[in-house]
Image (tube, rainbow, N blue to C red; front, side, top):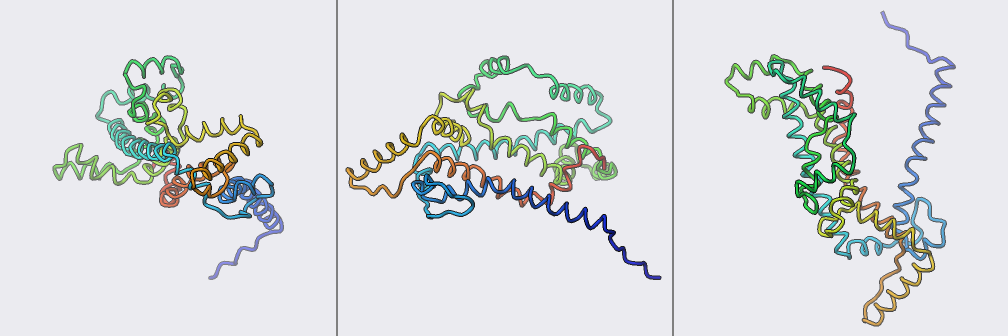
Length: 310
């Protein structure tokens, strides 16, 4: 016997219509600022100063991006940000998952005590000054390791991965032990591969946090230019552009063009703090935008592992 097809009521249609309109407005409001920044970054700086640039460049140019990477500071800062992000993700995922697996084993006597100790760090913090003196006492100021060591294990990420591991079938671990596998081999060959959804979520959190971080550079490595990150350079550019007026920027551009003309080189275009800021913002955002589509299939399934067991 065939079931009758469900016919949506008038209320359902009204709800779907308003829901679609609301989502469309939300997408526009969310997407427009980024599209505007992209348009400004590809538009000629002198033309941008006239206004009227929304989501499409009026005078296309790559001069803004060439200027960004022409300075060795920004290019080196980009490499530092990539290095700290990759290392932070790899080490954080491996060590956090290893600790989460240990704390998920019922035979481990002190697992509850250690779990509580980690959870307490989410609610109680020593503050900036004690942490600074701790970092300084460990001789990590002005050291690349200051980007890696303080964030090796996160309590929030630990809870997510531990909850996911607890939901895995115990029979798989017992079968591996019967086959003669030790704890480390079980962790590497059984647990770690099965945690892909949780690892994708945590990895994305760690990557975004490490990539967007600039405050640790400002506090611990501001005196060492070789450890400057891309976000810190963007922050300095934002601060400088806010202190510069349009007239000062125009005078600086004219002086740069005159200097290039005297040296027999073509200026190639004009550059303003607004255009430089837009170009660096796009450069800083693109890596995360490229990585997210590959993790999305795991992200949807793994985002609820901290609240739903199994």
